[in-house]
Image (cartoon, rainbow, N blue to C red):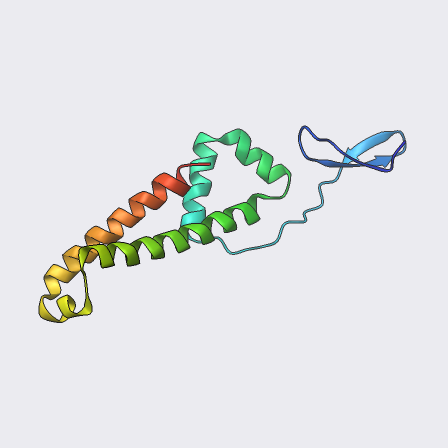
Length: 125
C-alpha cells in the first residue's frame, strides 16, 4: 500500500498510518491579510455557497483564495475608476473650477465601479 495518496474527488491528501489512511490536516495556508473586498466575498460565500466555502476551508486554501479575490477586486476597481474618469472627462481642472461638480461626478464614478466589482467578482464564484 502507498504511504501517501490524494483523493481526486475532494482534493485531500492522506497518509497511511497502520492499516488506515488519515487525512493530512496540517495547514499549508499562508496568512495573508484580507481586505474589504475579500471580507465581503467571504460573507457572500458563507451565506450563499456553503459547500464551496467548506471545501476551500478544509483544503486550507480559503485565505489564499480570498487574497486573490481581494487583489483582483482592488485592481479592477482602480482601473474602472480611471477609465470612467477619462470617459466622462473628469479632470483636475474641473476640480479646481467647480469642486461640488467634481465631488458629485467622482461619487457617481466610484459607485459605478463598486457595483461592477460586486457583480463581476464579489457576488460571483
